[in-house]
Each structure stands twice: as C-alpha cells, then as structure tokens.
Length: 362
Image (cartoon, rainbow, N blue to C red; front, side):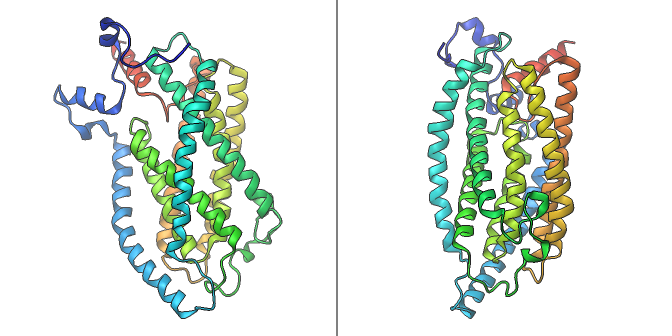
C-alpha cells in the first residue's frame, strides 16, 4: 500500500501520535519549561564542545596550511602538486551525489522498502521513517560496495598497500622519497575527489535532514574530522596514507550499512548473520588495523605540516569507533534478551519517544 501522509488520519490519531521530528520534541518540551540544550545528553555536549574546539583551531590551521601550500607551489613550478582549486572537482561530484541520493535512495530503494518492510507494531509515521531510512542505507551500501571494489582493484598491487588490508606492500613505501615535491597521481587525485564529494554530500544531509538522529553530534564531529583529514592530507601531498585509512573505513562501512538495511526486516537469521559479520569486520578493521597499524604509520610521518592536528583528529575518530562498537554490543544484547532488532543509533524519533513513554509508564 502507498505510504500514508503525516497529515492523514483522524483527529484522535493525530493527538495520539508522538512528535515526529526533533524540532517538535524541542517545542513540546519547551512549552513545559524545558530548553533546547536540555535535549543534549552529557556525551553529546562533550562531542559538541570538542567540535567547537576543532572549528576554532582548525580555522587557524587552514590559514597557515594554505600559505604553506602556495609557497611550495611557487617554489617548485616544475612539479604538479595539489592546490586548493582541485577541490572544485569534489564540489561537482558532491552535487551529483546529492541528486543520486534523491533519485536512487529516496525514490528507487524507498519504494522497494515500502514493499519489504511491514511490522504491525509500527505506527504509520514510524513505518514511513523506516522506509525512508531503508532507502538511504541501501544507497550508502551500494556506494561503499562500488568504491571498495574499484579502489581495491587499483591499490592491490601498489607497493604501499599493506598486507593487513589485502595487499603486499610495506609501510616504508607509504612515504616516497622527495615528499612533498612530487607530481600528484591523476588516478589518486580522482579517487580523493570522489571520496571527499561523498562525505561532503553526507555532511550536508546530516545537517539538513538528520538532526533527529540519536548520534547527530557524533556524526557532525565524525564528518568534520573526515573532511579535514582528507582535504589537508591531499594538500600536503600525502594521500597514500589517506587512501589506506579510507579503504579501511569503507570496507567496514559497507558491512555496517548492510546490517542497517536488514535490521527492520522480519528475517532473524539474516539479521544474526549480518550482525556477526559486521562485528568481526569492525573489530578487525576499526579497532585493530586503524589504531594499531595505520595510526602508528601516521605518527611516524616525516616532516609533516600540522602533524599534531592530524593525530588529534585521528584520535577523535578512534574514540568514536570504540564508542560506537559499545553501542553495537548493546544492540546485540537487546536482541538476545528481548528479541528486538533495533538500531538505537539511527532510531526514528517516534519510536524513541514511544519507548520513553513505555518506560515512564512502568
């Protein structure tokens, strides 16, 4: 059946329906004496403070970095090094991703989800949010599958693609001789611009449509760190280590969105299989390879501008990874104890409000 509109239904249903967006939740709480900032948990407040500090110090860092980049370019006109104008390609790719997100995610995959997802416990609004979420996560899963396949076929034979990620290279080749005065690899440049464009488009959607997410503050911090790290690792002409970090994240992201795409289905066996595959891959890639293989390589980078800022941002991502893994374990325990498969990280607003109402009633 077609998705019901949020405005449809009788008057009695409208009064029984909980707030459908974060803005409505804030407005209803403010009417009884609450304030906007009371809706942020202590952890979210910490993430927002860290984000603010990154924004302040990052702005100063950007100014010095741009001066350094233009000095290097002017000092060696015989070398084709990265320049800020290269990011215009990422902007055009970002516009394309925004269009594809609407056409493929919100229309094609959402229609498929409308036929697939059906739970009698859901209200019409919750079901609508579930279907929209299904379209978004399927779109993301397809992107990460494609980018992982293409990037691995290109990097697998490189002398700097590490064995921990399926290659045969060595860490010493991640930083070739002559840095930073080396010609930029056209294929690597295109790969970086596409990846930056995807994360830019994801950041736009997070700020514009995902304020209802339970992990909104964490995702803002995550996207900010990712874009900073990608942009300036490219500008200082050290994208090889960036490619390794991106591939490590992309592979685990593909499996993460795989479990997100099936968590609302009625197939428990599929949910269990996807969950354990995701947990094993995430533990290996993000809790071992990233902090204990790739982070030390970044730490040992030779004569890198803004080295401490890179390390701090990578450290913030590592903390987020362990925090999210703890939430994944919590979801698994909930499934074992109650038989409920719920993504508490990206749970619809209505569903969260209903759960809070149940807890208060108990």
